Amino acid sequence: MGLALVQSQSLKLKMAPALYQSVTVLQCNNEELSRLLHEKAMENPLLRVEDRDYHRDYSSMRGEGKYTSDVIEETAADMVDFRELLHRDLHQTRLDRICLEAADLLIDSLNDNGFLDEEPNTILDRLGKLEADPDQALAVVQSLEPAGVGARSLIECLCLQLQRSELRCPLAETILTDYRDCFMTGDWAELASSLGTNEDEINEAVARIRKLNPNPVATIQDEPPQYIVPDVVISKKDGGLVCELEDQYLPTISVNMDDYERYMKAADRETKRYLREKFEEADWLLSGVSRRKQTLMKLAQMVMKRQEAYFLTGNREHLCPLTMKQAADQLDVHESTISRAVAGKYVQTNYGLSPLKAFFIRAVRAKQGTLSAFRIQFEIKQLVENEDRRKPLSDQMLAQLLAQAGMGCSRRVVTKYRQACGIGSTIERRAAYN
Image (cartoon, rainbow, N blue to C red):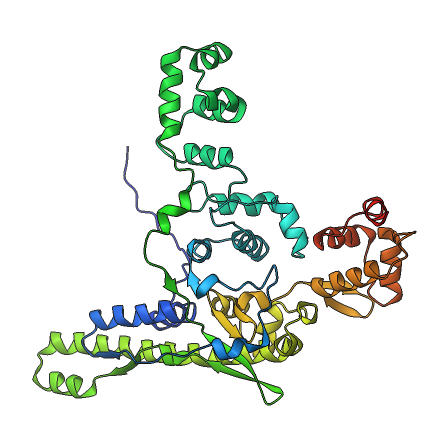
């Protein structure tokens, strides 16, 4: 075998340190940014980070009464629970926008044991996510840690754990899925006979099953709860709205210029190079924090203006269609910048605490323009509430009435939105009326 020199060219994209720092800071929420600043201060002797003694009571904002929807949820006691941890893990993955948003909605729909009480397609249809693939979104959620999260039953939860651990055992999976009754009664002889194996193998499979956790999310909820600090506050004041960044929770950050100048005077060449590097890093960090503040404020103000009717009333049918691309175009930035600015951020309103992403609403095309899925659902509810109980409106008739009101959409879409509202079919409603 001979040796040869081969010359080749390759093109690689490398993010500049300053840009990388800016991107990292932008996608942090207040809690994460505070932690990042303290970590950087430990690594950089020129960086001065000091916590502030600040606390704000939001209870006065909730005098309007709480409003809860399937999309904009308040977090109980404003605590970070396993769902928030799953959201953070999810946003570390590389997924297309539609799948990512659908997986986010499924995570929000998990019960306190980490299970789904409804099928993914039912959840996504109800929330207006018609273009998403429910099976793909479910697979993404079920791929997150801990194994078993996103299951629709205890059996599926245990099988998911078996599939992702050293305990994997096809026989154990078969017992759980096809011979659950025998397993529950402990009839190992019957199991062995039905599966054509011996009791020793059955005992080994059962031992593996018993090592599984029927409540996997409990393993990540043992620590004391953390409280969500909102990044933005949008509140009603004097008949209008006020938008504020809640950055008083963040520590102050500065460069210790006195130390820098003193060290530089007495330092040798190598030390001076090190100090310049640390000064640059600190300067990049300060610039990144400043840009994050500007971007988040512009974005929050744009969302406040776009969703003004909701922030004033709390009625979700007033939410307007809004995409991240539209926000990016309006603020003259890249869509990825908006995505990072939205990720993990929370907004405190008069109606509770909501993820910032909840105000980005899918549009439905209609004759009078684009409407939110919530608006279409609201109109369907109104039509059904006022229908002739002797002759309930069919989905085709509902579609025609919506079209007459300038909100034309197909019968299939009407069916999905009707079901999402929990409204029965014509036959079911007629039976209920009688």
